[in-house]
Length: 115
Image (cartoon, rainbow, N blue to C red; front, top):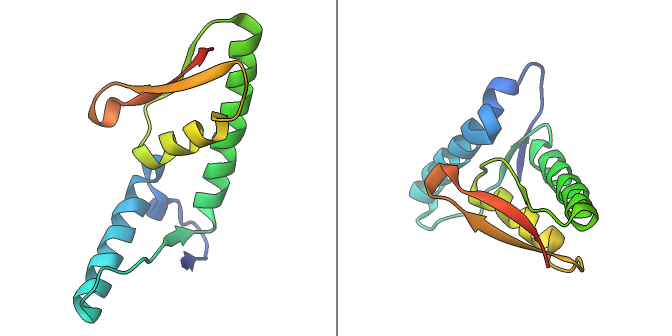
């Protein structure tokens, strides 16, 4: 785990964590060429990934409660696969709702549906 700490590091995170994702890929690529195997190196900035995961879990639970209350589906914003996975896992054991991913490419999003 490489957690970068400092001032004004928002540029390293980028829009929706895209720059951070690309930075992590480049670090893994460089290290893999040095050691000959693909490493499991996680690059983070000021624990952004942990905060984002907690935000997504909280959002998932709030939206699941709304779906149960209204019996109407909720469609979340498009997000990368690892973030959609967080939503699916957060709601897999919640009674009364189910999740599905819909859309293509970077427009893929999670739907939370009444069960």
